[in-house]
Image (cartoon, rainbow, N blue to C red; front, side):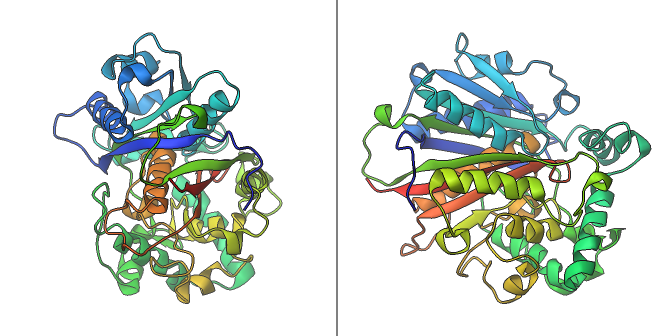
Amino acid sequence: MSTTNVNMPVILGGSIYPFRRYRDGSHWRDWVRQAGTEALVDAGLEPRDIDAVVVASETDFLNLQVNPAPVILGELGLTGRPAVRVEGGGASGGLALREALAQIMAGLYRRVIVVGFDAAAGHLEADDVQLVYGLSFDAETDGMAGARAVTLYALSINEYMGKYGVAPAQFARVSVKNHGNAVGNPWAHKPMEITVEDVLNSPMIASPYRKLDCSLTSDGAAAVILSHPDVTPTAERPRSRIAGSGVGTDFARLGDRNSRHEFRAKREAAHAAYKMAGINDPAHEIDLAEVYDPFTGAELQSSEALGLIAEGQAAAALEDGIFDADGSLPVNRSGGLIGQGGVPGATGIAQAISMDRLLTGRYPGQAPNELQRCGVIDAHGGICTLAAVHVLERMEP
């Protein structure tokens, strides 16, 4: 791996407010305040050390707050700093990382805190949340016509199954793996030990997806601090940096695509991120991945789009244990959206925090001799309509 730009941002610290369904009277302002404050502590910084803020949240419908950035600045003692809000559906957090990266590489700011949040579970009924999410596709032809995320993803994975001969029992293993990986993750919404039979016996939602094939809608927040290497404090422990970044897009309507079974936007985003990071063979140069998995089949589709495995081979690799926590290329050690939970504005940021801790040996329950040097994270909005992919690499002290 040979990064072409030595000025890529370094991750100084981060924190996640646990992904849950909060009906305890707490507010997203509380979650953001705690995540941001803990990120500063983790980085060893004070508010005065932050030059700018990037905020990620999917929609004001969930949070009942238009223009949230000034409110967040007030909660974190950062009023007066430049701020921008980023929105891209489920890709919002990943796009916010890219915005902060661009600001630092352009020389506009030295240290940027990226804050993501959404109140997606606690104060709205599930049907209302799904109605809002439906507007993240083509609102006129899909969302307002009654299409929901699970039905559109089900159409996509059915084409995938037909093309590659994959059965529901195979991608049910993703649910088993990711719920199990979430055990021991203090930020996770649904850690639990289940079996393939449990998944196959759970209620049908939209064939072939059953309840345990689906990710969780969660409340929560995450914050991470990026720094230009020239102003990165010296540290005795390893750090990680963002070595590559890419964004890709596809038609908003699934029916307009030539290959509805594949995630073209993610493939394009990954190609750009790998090129920036100097990666030529991701299947052998990437050590682990945090993959966007709104549904079990989407993890297989994403793994192939990211070049971690050949097309049509992800299910077989999963069965062989390649993507397990102790496999040769662990995928979603955090539990992903299925085990950790899905907070649209925070997910991409939480992925960066988890990957940073995995690469630097600080992840909960990580074996002392476990060492990975390069990881990829990805987040997408719509039916992979808009994708953001980042490569992170370990930096020795």
